[in-house]
Structure formats: C-alpha cells, structure tokens
Amino acid sequence: MSMRPFVASGASAADLERKAFADDVAYYLRLDPKQLPSRYFYDPLGSALFEAICQLPWYSITRAERRLLAAHAAEILQRVPSLSTMVELGPGSGEKLSMLVAAAPSTASLTVHLVDVSAAALDLATRTLNAYDLKVERHQASYEAGLEALSRRHDRRTLVLFLGSNVGNFDPPGAAEFLRTIRRALRPDDALLIGADLLKSERDLLLAYDDPLGVTAAFNRNLLVRVNRELDADFDIDAFEHRAIWNSVESRVEMHLVSTRRQRVRIAGSRLDLTLEDGETIWTESSYKYRAEEIVAILGRAGFREIDQWVDASDGFALTLVAAA
Ligand code: AVJ
Image 1: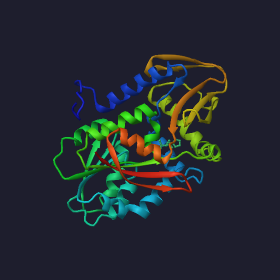
Image 2: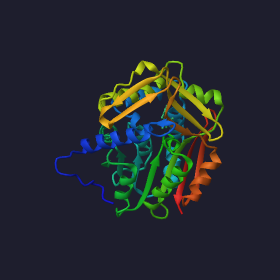
Image 3: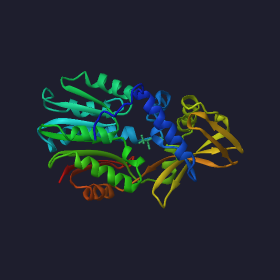
C-alpha cells in the first residue's frame, strides 16, 4: 500500500475526505442502532472542545498521563537506549512528545515522525517540536498508512507513542488488530509506549464523560453541527441530548445522542433521509477501560514483551512500555 492515495484527476485530498465522510455517515446511520464514528469529532471546533475537556476537573486522563511522563520520562528513555526515531500516532499539541524529547540526553540525531489525519494537529505539534534541535517529519495520513511508510525506514531503534488512551476507542478485537499492525511496522527491540485509562468507579467515569459544565455534551453534539455544515444536513441540534452510560459488561463508556422527539432529517451530501423516533439514539463513541495487567496481556498477544509499567493509582491511568519481541 502506498502512502499517497491515487487521486483521480480533479479530485483533491479534501474532496476525497469529504466523500469518505459522506459514505461513512450514510453507512453508520443505516445501522441498527444508528451510529456515527468517533473519529469525526475532531473538526476545528471539536478539537478545541476536546482541548477544553482535557482541562475539566472531572476528566483526568490528560493530567494523569502528563504527571506520569513528567515523573518517568528520563527512565523511559533509559529503558530504550540509542533511539534514532520517535513516532507519535495522534500527537495532539505535541506537548507529551516534547516532555520525552526534553528528557533525552541528546536530540541532534533524533527524528520524530508525527502521524495524524488532521493538518491542523500536525501544524500545532510541529510548532511545539520545532523548539528542539531535531528533525520533524509529518505524515498527514491514517495511523495505518503512516506506520506503513515508517516500516520502510533504515535507522536505529524506534519508539512509537500511542498515548491519551486513544486505544480505548477501538473495541477489543480492533485494538488487538491495531497493536499487531504497530508490531508489524517495527523490528525486534523497537519499542511502544502506550497510555491507557483504567477501570474505575462508575461515578468517576460518568463525571468524566458527562461533565457538569456540559463541555462533553457540546463535543458530542458538535458532530451533528459538523454533519449539517459539511454534508448539507438539517439536524435540529436542540432536539438532541447528550447521554453517557457505563456498560460494565463490555467495560466501556458509551456516548450517545438522544433524539428528544420524533424527527425527520435530510443529509443531502450522503443522499440519506432519516427518521428518528422520540428517545432513539445515535451511538457516537465507546471508550474501553482496562485493568493494568490486561494491557500487558493484550500487548503480549500482539507480539510485545513488557519492559515496565507506571500506574497513577489516584486517577487510574497506566503508561506501559513494551519492546517488539
Ligand atoms: C481522545 C478518545 C481518549 O475517549 O476519553 C473525551 C475522547 N470523548 N471525552 C476519550 C473523549 C469524550 C477521548 N479520547
């Protein structure tokens, strides 16, 4: 598979992106129950709302991870010496990668690769990383395509970062498959650092995903604002409520948008007419929560061996460092 998609004459990358969005919206809204994929939350407003979520007192993932990185960055780098390459899948602001880079004994021979579908995210992270003396390479691509490009490189040891509990958006079979995709892009002794939110009380989980300020509700409902704008749809945003539930059987927080009345919606860009019953939901996200030992076990089955794990017990978050076996 090539990094550069084949582009039919006249069709820009933006056209292709819009087409993929339109097709996904049509596909997922025809499922029963109706769904929309969480990867579409992150338009510019959605990304800003997510940054706000990270500052909420009830959403501890970002702070817990930052604390663990601040405390253990030097140790993490000592456990994987002579790195030539760091790769971050979904670098966000680049702040966490910077914490690791800042703890490196020298960065002059280091190349960091930033992989993200969003050009805005890549811009932000590039600016943050440009404060250091190192080479920054941007890959505006899916994680899979970015990893594929990296697997052809010739260098010394690589450390891949998959942070922020982004792994939680995959269902367990999807997570297992994705971790194997990462493993295939690596050579023995390359490493992976993965940040994952842990199982905790239902009360804490629901406060994190249904916060008293309503920021998460806005983040969720903004997906409909985006569909309206980009796909010429007529969702009545006021007629949807945010709902977060803890599904203990599946060990996941689910976010839904609940229609507060029977309504018809036209999504012109997806050629879709939709009826929602009063109380019917659109399922927009799952965030799976694990036990610390489960993360090591899942990584083991994907072809990694544990180097070390650092757990923040107060907020229930784990950083797990593994090597390609
Ligand atoms: C960025 C996927 C880790 O699942 O906690 C935050 C996204 N959703 N609040 C998460 C999110 C609702 C977040 N991840």
